Amino acid sequence: MKKKLSKKKIAFLAGAVVVIGAVAVRMLNPGAESMELHRAIPLEVMDLMSTVDVTGTVASAEKELVYSTLGQPVMEIAVEVVDHVEKGQLLAKLDTAAIESDIKAQEAQIAATAQQKQLQLKKAKTDLYYAEWYREHNQDADILAAEQAVDEAERAVESAKYDVRSAEDNYDEARRANDRADSDIYSEYQLNQLRDAVSAAHLRLEGAEANLKAAKQRLNRAKWDSDAKLKELQDAVTSAETAADLTTEYIALEKLKDDLANCIINAPISGTVTAVYAQEGAEAKGLLFAIENTEDLIIETAIKELDVNAVKPGMPVQIKSDATGNEVFEGEVLSVDPASRKDANGETVTGSTAEYPAKVRVTSKNSGLKIGMNARVSIILEQRKQVMAVLYDSVTTDDEGNSIVYVARPQQDGSYIAQAVVVQPGLETDLYLEVSGELSPGDLILQNPETLHDGMVVNLAADMMGDASAAAVG
Image (cartoon, rainbow, N blue to C red; front, side):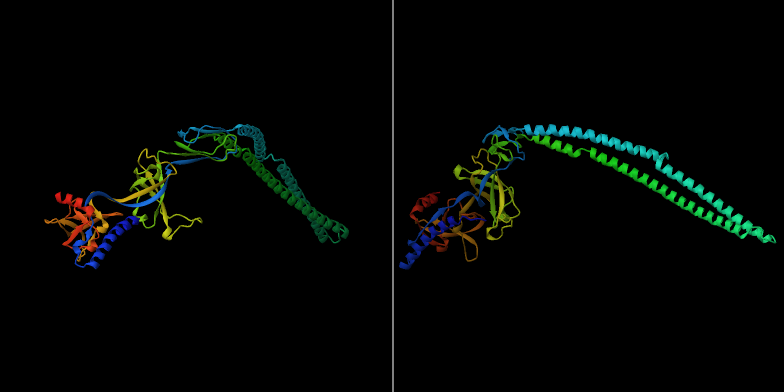
């Protein structure tokens, strides 16, 4: 934790002067121990605190920056810096003429588009309805015509088959007749004609069967075309339904209405207006106002790496500032960041310069602290009320390792001797050390214990004689 080394150095230098003086006396006259002058400080009962001392800047615990994304001109500014505002209070008004015109145009466009799209959807649904009805009731004209052509082709095939059988029967009968008779009843010419008739009948049958196959293909095609038409009409209905959905247009309309509402700029929190960036007539795009709660203040500071593990949220603090003089304000640690500050590249700062951002809440009311002021903060790690304490340089150790202080005890002849008193050290601060043992408030604690030993006769410095006499009387 941070130590006020300058105070230690002052105490050390003051003691060093006495030590150097004593050493000089010894060098000039080794037997002149009684000529040394020793300083003694009366033992006090005091409040002790172990602290981490940091500096920081006063800020508001609750702060809102009021922005606008609209490009409308500012018509009216209703507040000034230092004005107190309540949440929802008017800050400014923007020109709404252009947005109102856009809303009317969008509403008219939606109405016209909706009517047109509904008519298109109605027609698409009607076309699909009739196409499905014709199909379900076998009234599709193309399919009916194709089915009729198939029926005619099938009859033509049956007729051609009958002609083939008849021609084959006639030819076979003529051959059998010639075989039964002694002489040819049918001439070779006649037989050839009958055989040609059979071939002609087969050709007609092949043609009829080819026509039937083609008719069936046309029927299948007609059915496929009908299915495709139904699918096309179904897709047309879906497309018309999609086109009739004006969600995008309504969203754009709602956006315009939101923009219209946002032309009235109200305070998002209660607090004090600490900055006004808006200007009447200028485009209201960007930062317009800053509102901060001047009654709820924090100190933004940083804890050094050496001290960060000792500081916890909730710890009490004492706050001072140059602007408020010696007055001390109360507060508490609000938070300590888990990571040290970042450098310009966003990288975590490590090493001896690592500092951890922290916030301290000011709990004193009417402190006089103002946002932006520099403040000194003492974070109280530990404290003791009304305990005996000595300058920590007054404590040394004996040969057995006990902590001791030397007390100047008055004698009957008016002289003083140094008495070693074993003490139990307690809380240590920047300057003082809590002690307990066979001591009483007012005991004269000798300084520079390295020059003393138990039972040694000591001469007190002149400025201590009054205190020594008072202590002896007490």
